[in-house]
Structures are given as C-alpha cells and as structure tokens.
Image (tube, rainbow, N blue to C red; front, side, top):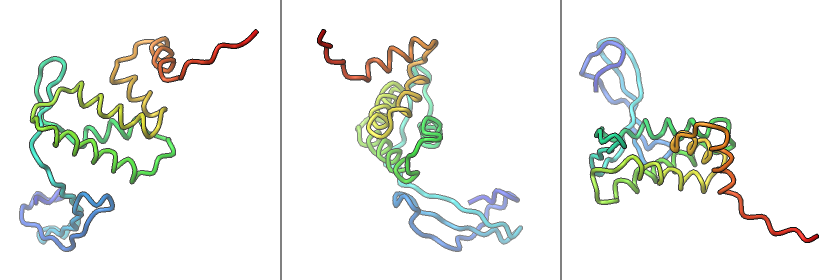
Length: 156
C-alpha cells in the first residue's frame, strides 16, 4: 500500500481488526520511510460492477460515490450512522448478487430509493429530488402527494 504522505510503496500493517460495520477490515499502517501512520479499509468485492448511465456512458461502480449521495440525503437526520452503513452494504450486496455486471443507473437509483423509503421519508424525498431531477416546487409537491395515503372523504 502506497503511503499517502511520502508515496513510499513499502508500508507495514501494524494492526488489523474488523471495522465497526463488520463487513470490512480496518488496518492501521506505518510507513518506515517517513514515519507516517494511516488507516485503510478492505472490503470483499464479489464482482466488478459497471454502471450504465442514462447517456449510455459506462463507468466502474464506485461504492464511495453511492455512500456520498446517500449520506448527503441523510444529513441532519436522526439516523444512526451504523444503520446507514448497513443499508449501503445491503444495497451493494444486492447489486452484486443480481447476477449482472452491467447495471443501469436507473436500477441503482430505484434500489436506493426503496432502501431510503424504509428508513426515512425526508431522506427519501431529498434523494428523489436529485434522482428524478426535480425542477420546481410543484415537482416536490406532486412527489410528496404520491407518498401520502388518500384522505378519507369528509362527511358534511
């Protein structure tokens, strides 16, 4: 592993243990060249996934990009960070177990929205506003209206 401080490629692992999410390994590393210490995380990757964008462009699946977008939608929400990590790991496992290496971005968005809807409706709406490219307040209103159950008729 290359040292992020000096670029030396000969670093040493000083400590390894399961990370808090229990789906990755946390490694403390030491660089003998500069004395720098840093942490790396190692995750199992079942297969290399490729995202097919709506434009047709192909790019490697990036778990960190998925995590950033989900965490942005959950900013300032009362959600336990461990629960977010579990949700992200579940989404990635689901994508990897689909049996396909090429996954349309639309499918990823749908899976993320399903997961968010189960955890927090505000985060769900936030994510949807970007995913569905809301352009005006009416778009939010229409989307939220679809979330609400129909009101029973009032008797007069």
